[in-house]
Each structure stands twice: as structure tokens, then as C-alpha cells.
Image: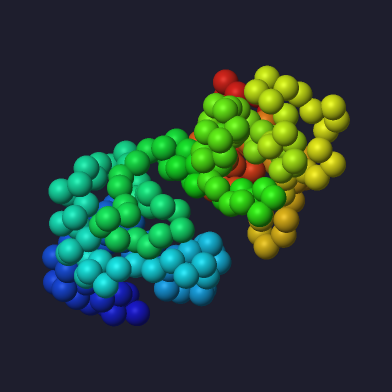
Length: 212
């Protein structure tokens, strides 16, 4: 068994010319898995929504060449400019986690009285800042509250519908997630805001200088 494992590894290096230890290769492999394999934990949010990897990037060497010519570095991850679009050169860039989180939030579609726009589009229409719009979304304001309360205004009461997140196949509120590892809901909310996956945000231990 050990000998077979060594042979497979040698074949892989000979075929592509790069080790699977290369971070860029793992990014490419995981990108394709999210879009092509129903067994992937994240398939429901990629391939399950019809998102595909372009034919050109089925070849790792083509993807690698594009990445190195378009700003790839070890600190960045691949990001789709249009979160409903495919993985292809015209729709992808290299971004930090915070930039990715802001891009995903900016492209959230909201429908009010039959009109659908992105969150940033509605912010411009309503005359409020993007940060105000994101604050309202993060705090689970209802669509009616978001659209009718002016900049600087407050809700008269808390929204009865708490925002929920999919965790291990079940929907949970931040308060419920906080009970998993005793991490404060605001800490989990902040982690999600900067781009952490929900599983990591709810379970990653706090550093010594942090408080739950």
C-alpha cells in the first residue's frame, strides 16, 4: 500500500509538473470540487446553484498562468466579482478575506414591492451609506424596516425574525451557535463579516487576548 501511494504521487508530479503541496494547485482543485462534486460540503452554494468553472480552467496550467499574471499572492484567495457568475477570467480576481466578504454582501439581492436590486444599489436609491445598509442586514432588519427607516433612524422594536445560518446541515441563530463553544454572538458575527466560514467562526478557539 505504501508503494502504491508513492507511485501515484510520482505520476501526479510528472503529469502536471507541480506538487500538490503548491497552494495555487489546491485552490484550483477545491474550486473545481465545489462546482463539480455533489459530495463537496460547499456544492450546494456553487455547483448546486449552477456555478461552473470555464472550460479553459479545466487545465490547471491555464489557470496557473492566468493567476500569476493577474496578481496572485500567498495572502489572497480567488474571488468572483459577480457572486452569481462562473469561475472564468473575466469574472475573477485575487482578493483578501475582507474584500471577499464585502463583495458577497454587496451582491446580495433584495426585493421590495416587486423591484429587485443589489444591497449597494438599494443603498444608493435610499440615500443611505453602504455601511448603514450592511449594519441593517447584519442586525436582521426586515425588508420593510430597511426600506422605510431613514438614515440615522432606529427601529421601534427588535425584529422578531433572527438571522439564521446553515451549520452542519441545520439552521441556527447566532445565539444558538454561541452555545457550541461558548463564543459570544458578536464575535461570531464579526468573524463571518471578515469572511470566515460559519463552521470556523463558531468553533475556532479564542486567542489569549480575546474575550468570549
